[in-house]
Length: 196
Image 1: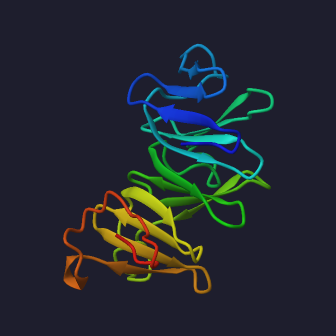
Image 2: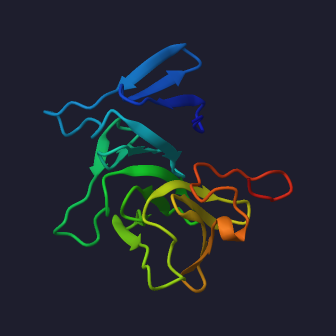
C-alpha cells in the first residue's frame, strides 16, 4: 500500500510489516514481540488501510487489528474480548477498508463483518443468519471492497454480498445468480463502474 506521504507499506506472511521510504531508500520493520504489547499483535499481515489523518491500520491472520500512529510511532491493538460485545468479533481480520465517513469495515474469517467507529472505538457486528436472507451470505469474509459510489461489497466463501445502508441489509449473489464460483477472493472495479 502506498500512503499519502509516499511510504510503501508491505505486509508479509510471517515477517511482519515493512515500510519503505522512497526518499531515503531505507526500510523500517515492524514485528510481533510476545513480551511487548506495544508491537504488532501478529507477524502475518493480511490487509492494510490508511485513515484520513495518516494512521496505518493492519489486519492480521489471527492477532486482530493494529493501528500505527504515524506521528508518534505508537502501535495500538484491537482484539476480541468475549466479555465485551462492542469489541472485535474475531482476531482473524483478513480484509479492511475505510468508507467515506471514516468508519473502518473489517472482514473477519469466521465472525462476519465488523464496522469500527473511531469516535468511540467500538465495533458493530454484521453476521450471517441462515434464516434471514437479508443478512450477509457467510461469516467467512475474504474481501471488503468500497466501490466508486461508496457502496460496500463483501467477498465470502459463499458468494458476494452488497450492503444497503438505508435498510441495514444485504443482497447476496452466488453461482445461481451467475457468479463463476461462490468463493470470492477479490473484487475490483473497472472504469465503467463494473465489478470483477
